Image 1: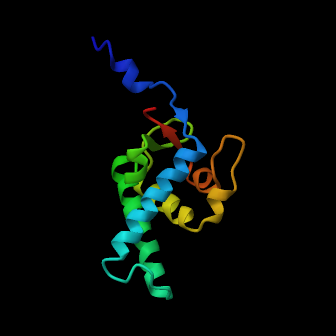
Image 2: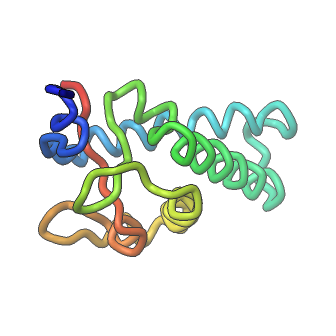
Length: 133
C-alpha cells in the first residue's frame, strides 16, 4: 500500500561527522555570536559582561536552531545535523539546550570516546552526522 514507508520508518544510518567539520561549524557559530554581540558591546571589549553576552547569544542561537531544525547555522552550512544516538531521530528541545550549554563549557567536547562523541553528546544521547558531503 505504501511502498516507500519503510525508508521513512527505518532510515539508513548516516555517517559520523568528522572532527574538522564539527570544529569549522563551531567556529562559524561562534563568529555569528561574536558579531551579534558586537551590536550591543564593542567587538574587542575585554570585561566580563560582553563575554557573557556572547556566550549567552551562542547558547540561544545554537540551542534554539538545533532544537527546531536539528542544526545550527554553522552545521547547516557544512551539511551536519544533530540526531539522537543510536536511533538517529531528532533530539528533544531540552536535550538540544543542555547539549549546547555543555558545549559552551568547553571541557565536555574535548573529552571524546572511541566513536568521536564528546561528553556533551554522550550525556544527551546525541551525535553529529553528515547529511551531505
